Length: 299
Image 1: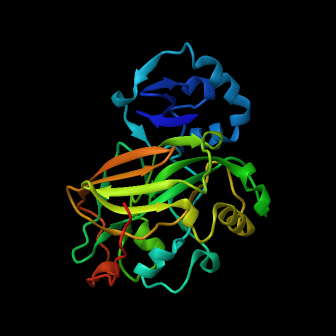
Image 2 (image 1 turned 180 degrees about the horizontal axis):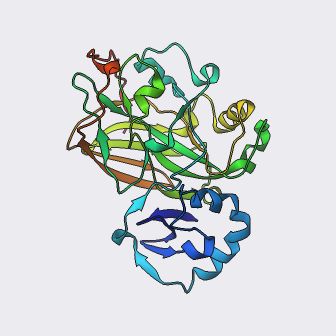
Image 3 (image 1 turned 60 degrees about the vertical axis):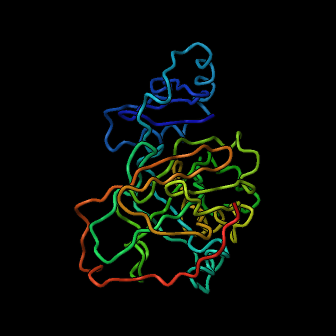
């Protein structure tokens, strides 16, 4: 199934170009704060899935184009991100480490946004904001010390994800924590509908210019390894999001750009970039020009 969150936080199932509202069936309270309804739905999915499937043939539908798509899980316990997890990206960034030995970092839930949102650039003269296309993994149940061979038991689904970053040498989390710096969507595709997550083609365009093109088979630390590594340190919770790392081709985005990411079997997001008026910090007072050796992309 393709599970979307839309409008004021309603939950829906994507069927072709239409959407079936299942908010009541899955028990999401639109007035709840914090908005953890999606997390609760994921945790209870084995109990509610049959109810959802039973109403799909006859339930009213609305056009997918008529709704505002929000980030599918707005309040996860954590967003786990793996740096330098493609060799070609490591080469272009001149990084001598890889995710297999570097570990992960965390992004705040407040950085999440959805397919109908805009990516807002902070007001940082002399700094560039770069796009990073990634696969997002949504965890389906609690787990600690997960064995590599059991990784599938803990995956609820997958989504397109972009990890935006202010380029520089300051703390990585600080540069990646701005609001709207973690677009996820356009929906969650449940794991049973993804034929092989280790062989998904991923592309990202800026204004119709292909910037990134890769396949998840080229990950340095694979999906079972990422889940095993994260769970060796902390307890994974339903709704947690894992960002798998980005391939070569990262580059600057500016006000007025349109960024489009597409991953096979998962869909695509097309988002506008707008210049914000806030976000200045003494940390970013000194200009920085990244020294990146670009690698050729294969269309």
